Length: 191
Image (tube, rainbow, N blue to C red; front, side):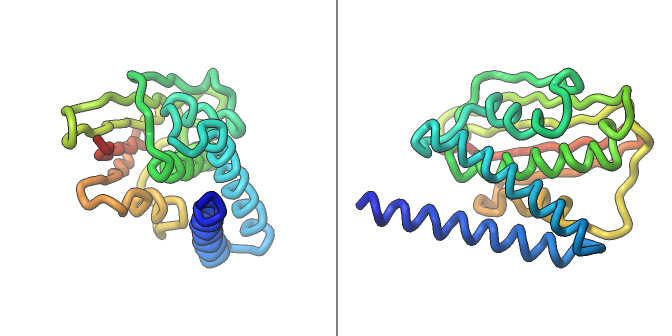
């Protein structure tokens, strides 16, 4: 039974890696850029796996997941992070880790973390009870250069728009405000 479970997890992980690699290569403008982006995304995936392995793949604390996803890339002082204690199942935790990685790297390249003064606010709350319990999380960038929607949808935008496709009621909304990107997550959590 253990061998079957391990085989299942490895196959799922390899499918995720294959998808990340394919999308990264398709959207890269050069082989060098593809190599850097793929390496960065795989490191992020590995950190999420480490966090889940520490908990025997039962899930992850949202605050721990956010910190593990953003601190390898930018000083934690540039972030305001907070919300009530939320336990994410492993499939949602992996998807969230990839989403936070994409948001962080985009903030470093184009947004509030591309200068010395910008910051990111990440706050969340639980709404509802039982089967209707929902996580509402907001990523808000401030103090960076003015932003607007890009000309083409890169891998990061595509990933964010589809990262939680496994539940029809879940969604991620990107708002390119002049003051900075606002990304809103609405996720149904299992009972």
